[in-house]
Image 1 (cartoon, rainbow, N blue to C red):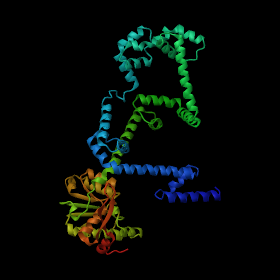
Image 2: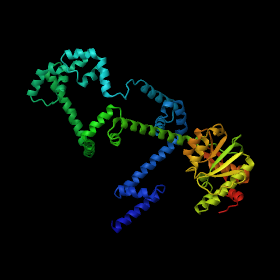
Image 3: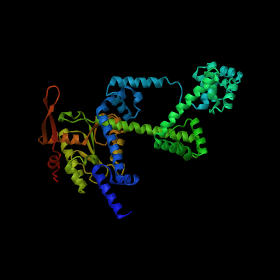
Image 4: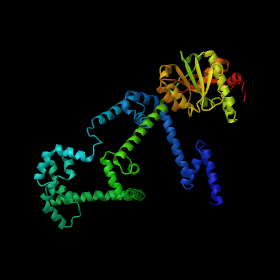
Length: 499
């Protein structure tokens, strides 16, 4: 790469970092390389992603609580993707009556589907043969080849009406007219189409010629329409060729067997799993089902994580702290970066001072709260001395992380009843989902520090009133109160740390 190209790439990367500061530099570099250094194309892709994320957040803000209520009322939609539900709400502009009616219609449609999609084609054909045995015998007597699959489809479509299924006789019934049309050089290769047209026109050749001419005119119009966008047609043709030539004849045969066995999904992924299982259809079925269950589990976890923010206890006043609490667990590593002064200590490689400061604030807070068991847990710490009534614990070496230790504690049989009177201070949403399932109460670290100020230093609370204008039929002013907490001063007073 020449010096000019390197300089140009560096300038493009700098401009991208200024435009998208939240995206990793390595990712930006990779995107530039993948798009051949096309700066405009990379910007367009990133802007598109950003717009999609912003739309997701706006829809979640507008319709998130309503979606949660709908999922509780209709358990059948809990497996649906949350973004699809949000788009449905947007489609009906948040009208819950229309959304409920739409969901009920979808559920009714699924309930009335009497065909089991997991039934293979062979089994379905055998069922239809048994169902229409007498009709098939009657058609066979008429000289119709009943082994052709379209015969069963027609009988099913017309509910066993033999007369409507007898159009297959047209091949022999109008053999003379078909021979006459072929002798005249009539441009239709499929004789069955000619037979249908002759049946429709009661054997009138002139009418058939007119119908065929109309069909050809429609075909030419479609062809001209496609030729107006040659780039699109070429792209579709290339895509079709690529799909056809990517699979060998053996792969196609294996796919047929897997489909008959009830294995569905992306053909490439299905074949990859089939080869991983050394060509065993049974193992492939098991593996694909495991993957499907895993995807469903992850989908449920993501939905739970998205809804967990509603489970946290909000602390607006000192009295908002729940009563009769017996145990409080503090996720130490999760609390180190909440307060600016503590975060600066961590960044200056003073982790021990940070750990000690959080412990001293917790001890001073519990002197006023008188909670029997308060435990401060870190992933790894050597400062295990108890600070007043606060027990300091290290998750390692017994556990890998604080999360593992907390989950193990709340899942112990002796703690099942105590979990109702247990509060865990953490902002880790994935951990919060697991703890909530066990019945624990949750408080975010920032809310806990705010409660410490309410209990220990109420003079550090600053209520600021803001006035805004409401521009409706009659303009008026609205006053809102915003509360500020001086967390840095709390740490300075209690832990004697100032940075």
